[in-house]
Length: 148
Image 1 (cartoon, rainbow, N blue to C red):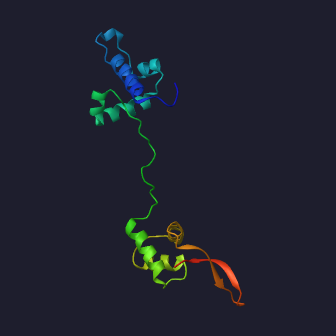
Image 2 (image 1 turned 90 degrees about the horizontal axis):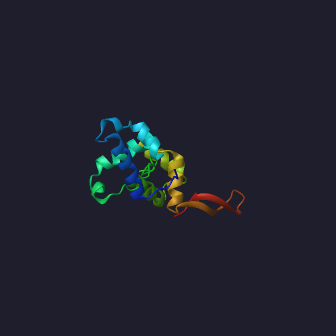
Image 3 (image 1 turned 45 degrees about the horizontal axis):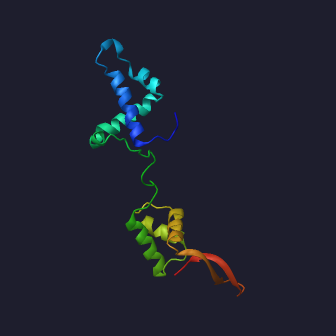
């Protein structure tokens, strides 16, 4: 069976397995595994689809089983909006020279954040990147700095 099937086709497959398992004639009934093998569907897929259908009875009326991604809906490593805003405000304040100082200050306040997370959020906000600074010999040098 192909990987991509339409919502109607998913519903039809689910219905075929369900009707084979719950046949009115007990002698013609099949196990879930047998019925799934007949239609070319993995039992785990049948169970997952059936659970989705049980949770969303309005799909039965429509005769569809929409595709649902099993991928996480949100990156678990994303910092909360308030913390990201705090990082940006600290960078704009001019008190901190680099992301590690901001990270240290946040950890002192009780916010669990790594220096890399601070740096990545500043880069995403356009507040950290290459800037020209004066080196120890008085010449301009391109260096990664907090941009204000």
